[in-house]
Image (tube, rainbow, N blue to C red; front, side):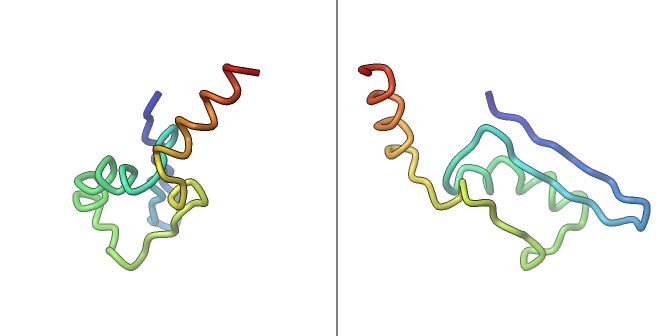
Length: 67
């Protein structure tokens, strides 16, 4: 399930986090929201899931199901 988690800090900064998404699809999911919140393009921290290709994830799921 795809989710977006938004954390608003007391100092006025925000954190937008994509959950349940891999690869570049996280950027597509959060882009409009980040724009509205004023998150700068270079202010992004990418999680390790960004490096995972969706096809790799499907292969892992198929292997787990076959075990």
